[in-house]
Length: 374
Image 1: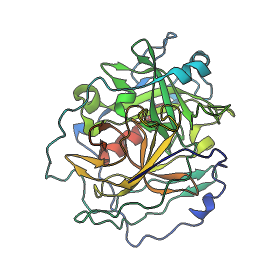
Image 2: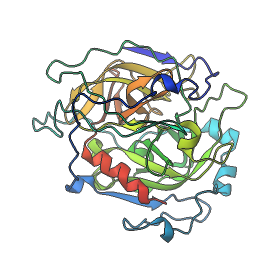
Image 3: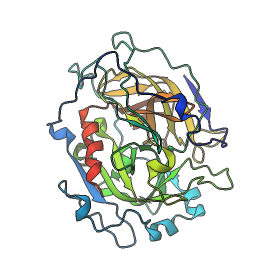
């Protein structure tokens, strides 16, 4: 297990993406088609992102269409944007959920998904003009685990960043998040407790790719305000850590007024398959130093294993602030992209162990539902 700090900021976004995606490969066998989730666990709720400037968390109808929306997503929320001064961004504290599980769930011998199958892979946005659409065969054997990933993370891309919000007591807080390639090209994925916790939706929410306070310009490609927040009803109603996943739909933003995926690229997503896989994890863990993780992105890489009904990893010890950071399978240093296979949820300081939700068809349902969050 190895961790690394962010050392270089000369990354030219996606300049070498063609190394990863020059053609569409023919899979050795077809991936199984996912079944439409029919369990109550796949249900989720979306609201218009609330602010302290008069906008309430009104529910978004699951049957809504872009024509039903009155908000212009091509325009930033100027009041929220003005709120997040450099001083407020720098003073935000790492968010800690209102409650954490004290005992890890007992092992459930009933598989949550088809163990050992090839998980469906969503197209990966490598640049505005390059898409990855092939299906990759997993080589890991769930009965023996997977060999630890040995390729160090050397590229800390703009696809990952910080999610800031006003709602931690009377102050400002942050989690980690990453851009996800969806139908709208407007979505970031994070932990459920980073969009909804303690009976309330987060307010004044913004996403800042690759935030780094050490730089003269700590937000290298700008700031995006949030239009809508979504998470699972299982998280809202029951605090179910197997569904501690949230998504946010962003307005056009950044320095050039773009959709987030057009500006920084977007990771793909894997779901189902083995609980054991190689992974690169990104986030802003406040317990890391030299440089301080509260202000600078960190990475960790290794292999996951099954723990209860979730996936887990030892040795990363990513503490508060890292919540919501992506667990990327098949991360590519050249492009700075991979497939989100989970997000950081909880950790145990005594052992340095982290837990994350195991992605099932429910996660695909959550992603697909964001297509209506306009």
